[in-house]
Image (cartoon, helix red, strand yellow):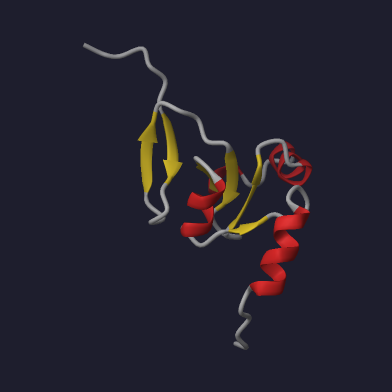
Length: 93
Protein backbone atom coordinates (compact mmCIF):
# COMPACT_ATOMS: atom_id res chain seq x y z
CA UNK A 1 0.00 0.00 0.00
CA UNK A 2 1.39 3.41 -0.91
CA UNK A 3 1.07 6.40 1.35
CA UNK A 4 -0.34 9.74 0.21
CA UNK A 5 1.96 11.56 2.63
CA UNK A 6 4.31 13.91 0.81
CA UNK A 7 7.96 13.37 1.69
CA UNK A 8 10.80 15.85 1.35
CA UNK A 9 14.51 15.23 1.02
CA UNK A 10 16.48 17.24 3.56
CA UNK A 11 20.17 17.31 4.39
CA UNK A 12 21.19 16.29 7.89
CA UNK A 13 23.94 17.73 10.04
CA UNK A 14 26.20 14.93 8.81
CA UNK A 15 25.78 16.16 5.22
CA UNK A 16 23.71 13.11 4.24
CA UNK A 17 20.21 13.34 2.75
CA UNK A 18 17.20 11.93 4.57
CA UNK A 19 13.45 11.77 3.95
CA UNK A 20 11.06 13.86 6.04
CA UNK A 21 7.33 14.50 6.13
CA UNK A 22 8.13 18.11 7.11
CA UNK A 23 9.51 20.47 4.44
CA UNK A 24 12.76 22.29 5.07
CA UNK A 25 12.77 25.83 6.38
CA UNK A 26 16.02 26.83 4.65
CA UNK A 27 17.50 26.23 1.22
CA UNK A 28 21.15 25.83 0.39
CA UNK A 29 23.59 25.43 -2.46
CA UNK A 30 25.68 22.28 -2.49
CA UNK A 31 28.60 23.79 -4.43
CA UNK A 32 28.74 27.10 -2.59
CA UNK A 33 28.10 25.53 0.84
CA UNK A 34 25.74 28.36 1.80
CA UNK A 35 22.20 28.43 3.15
CA UNK A 36 19.43 31.00 3.26
CA UNK A 37 15.74 31.69 3.36
CA UNK A 38 13.49 29.99 0.83
CA UNK A 39 12.43 33.43 -0.43
CA UNK A 40 16.00 34.71 -0.86
CA UNK A 41 16.04 37.18 -3.79
CA UNK A 42 19.46 35.98 -4.93
CA UNK A 43 18.46 32.31 -4.99
CA UNK A 44 15.15 33.08 -6.70
CA UNK A 45 16.97 35.03 -9.45
CA UNK A 46 19.35 32.12 -10.00
CA UNK A 47 16.46 29.65 -10.14
CA UNK A 48 14.54 31.87 -12.59
CA UNK A 49 17.49 31.87 -14.99
CA UNK A 50 17.85 28.09 -14.86
CA UNK A 51 20.71 27.84 -12.41
CA UNK A 52 21.04 26.62 -8.86
CA UNK A 53 18.29 23.95 -8.94
CA UNK A 54 20.53 20.91 -9.60
CA UNK A 55 22.69 21.78 -6.59
CA UNK A 56 19.92 22.90 -4.23
CA UNK A 57 19.56 21.26 -0.83
CA UNK A 58 17.15 21.87 2.03
CA UNK A 59 17.61 21.98 5.79
CA UNK A 60 15.18 21.57 8.65
CA UNK A 61 16.76 24.46 10.56
CA UNK A 62 19.79 26.70 10.87
CA UNK A 63 21.59 24.49 13.40
CA UNK A 64 21.49 21.58 10.94
CA UNK A 65 22.83 23.73 8.09
CA UNK A 66 25.73 24.93 10.25
CA UNK A 67 26.46 21.39 11.46
CA UNK A 68 26.65 20.28 7.81
CA UNK A 69 29.33 22.93 7.18
CA UNK A 70 27.24 25.58 5.40
CA UNK A 71 27.48 29.34 5.93
CA UNK A 72 24.70 31.97 5.97
CA UNK A 73 23.77 33.79 2.76
CA UNK A 74 25.05 37.38 2.63
CA UNK A 75 21.89 38.55 0.81
CA UNK A 76 19.01 37.18 2.89
CA UNK A 77 20.81 36.56 6.20
CA UNK A 78 23.21 39.53 6.38
CA UNK A 79 23.46 39.51 10.19
CA UNK A 80 24.34 35.84 10.29
CA UNK A 81 26.76 36.30 7.40
CA UNK A 82 28.54 39.16 9.22
CA UNK A 83 28.96 37.02 12.32
CA UNK A 84 30.19 34.07 10.22
CA UNK A 85 32.64 36.33 8.38
CA UNK A 86 34.07 37.72 11.64
CA UNK A 87 34.45 34.31 13.29
CA UNK A 88 35.32 32.08 10.31
CA UNK A 89 38.89 30.91 10.10
CA UNK A 90 40.27 31.66 6.68
CA UNK A 91 43.33 29.66 5.67
CA UNK A 92 45.53 30.61 2.73
CA UNK A 93 45.52 28.17 -0.17
